Image (tube, rainbow, N blue to C red):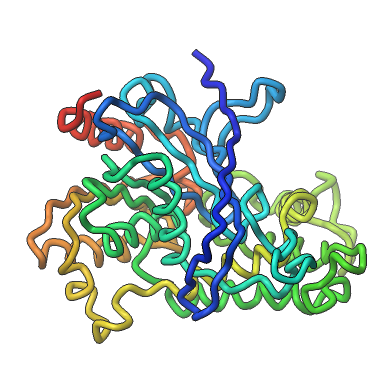
Amino acid sequence: MTLVAVAQSMTFEAPLALRSGASIRGYSLAFETYGTLNADKTNAVLICHALNASHHVAGVYADQPGSTGWWDTMIGPGKPVDTNRFFVIGVNNLGSCFGSTGPMHVNPDTGKVYGADFPVVTVEDWVNAQAKLLDQLGIQTLAAVMGGSLGGMQALSWTLQYPQRVKHAVVVASAPNLTAENIAFNEVARRAIVTDPDFHGGHFYEHGAIPKRGLRIARMIGHITYLSDDVMNEKFGRQLRDGLDIRYTTQDVEFQIESYLRYQGDKFSDYFDANTYLLITRALDYFDPALHQGGSLAKAFAQVQAKFLLVSFTTDWRFAPARSREMVKALLDNRRDVSYAEIDAPHGHDAFLLEDERYMAVVRAYFERIALEVAV
């Protein structure tokens, strides 16, 4: 059965206070829903997306046969997150470039495109905006909130900001904060963008330009961190692009891995917004729930009421299993209900998007447990 997705949007006129001290009003959030909300509205599952994803989580658009949602392997009729049982909601984050209000939209206070003047947003701001959307949908309590990578940080933040509204949190391939190495990767990617001559201080829209060179490099840097060394060696090794002899050039593509990264960079620069990339990577950098608890994650988790499933992948070096174990320990220190699965998979960070049988089985079993608690 093919799940048909329908894009929706909701506008909020009242100002949303942001963690930076700024606020934004007259903003819209793009979202999609799948399945049916039960009578007592207790079977809702919120899916939080990662850096370059969106609200289009599952299914296809009726008029776009190839438009498969980014987590379609996970969500749908009969899938681990079964839309025959659960009402699933995907929301595009504020500041994104896939439908929700972002830097390419008009600021209602000035009548001009936001550009670089779009306010800095954080994970906590996204969660607050999502909560306002759920309020309008009449959903007070979530059966579960789920996300991978940056989406996992949002799921975690939900349990901290709205502990009484979340029954379960499913946090996949994520971390309680970024390491210095991860922040460093983000900074190099940002510098590639802001030093592109076509960036124009973030107001490139006014110049009819797109900083594609910077976006290409940013994506290439990011993509390297999403894959494992094993996967790159297996797929590309040291194969030359033309499969023939070395040409002894310093500027042209020689190796297959170079060709692949350039392809990924070119594709990314055609659809992603440069200011959005800066905003989202900075939100990643800022997230740190233990910051105001003396660095103690256990103290930060003291208010958590949700039950947790955490999943990590052995070859994910960007969000290594050790980071998930930190969260497991902090939750156990607070005597919270925690399930943890560490999947031996070769795919690196991208494993959370792939259809590994063991991974799918773990998530399926956990959601079957949740289904027993709600009238589905």
